[in-house]
Length: 252
Length: 101
Image (cartoon, rainbow over all chains, first blue to last red; front, side, top):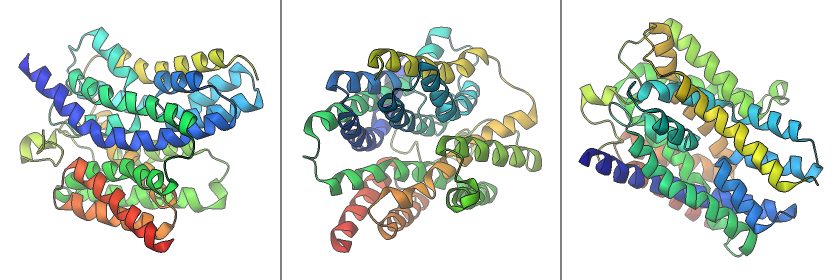
């Protein structure tokens, strides 16, 4: 079981850039919480129990408007529905015999970023890798919110802005190395980004929320790619087993 | 404003269910090639879609955002680790915004 320990620390290590980015983003969330009059305790509790940026930002608007609990539930369902796709993908990345309690615990940590590093692990996903990443990312998210509420504008805006790029840098570090080895993946990434740009910039699509755009594009593009270019080599990250280094594992 | 704690509880339950249901319900390996391929492509597509163009709008100016993107792609292409790519993008954006104002 030494492997679990090693995987836990590897998850913590990969969780560091996530924690940095989370801290910056949740700091701005904390400022927004204070602006609608949410207490430091409630804000921190919300971040710790939800661990989602877009969902929480949207929730603040709903709370401020005093909308119904049903509206709150529906908004979270729509905005966070992409986690369901990620969770489906992770269900295949974990060993089929993984016990139920591990699945229940891993579920808490399915965020864009932790999902990103989890699919990058070579071979099967050990729940302990996720726990390692969550153990550093989740407190950073909750504490960032708390600091945002309490300290407000003490941290210079410049630093907060710069830190928020960390999350995107990480996404890039996950998708680029496999694309270098597989031209098809590279094309897929370019097509995804181009369509995402169209969806974001064309007035025609401006009525669709950000979370919904991610879902629509992911289903359409992944679906088309699955029909046109079926692969039978397991799930993301597993290519690393055959080709050697996969970018994400060289520092494990 | 209604009860904040109930709002938070509603959010937390809905979000957790979304995350945990597939993980607990899909316990067997899927053998259908199309579905496997679909799930294989999801991470690449979804991370691409989330990164671009959002990274351009995350910074003070589109130029620094684009510079951060370009630096991250180059470093990742040449095999830099997750951590160094993320930190390099942050530092570059920070320095550029100092000059842009």
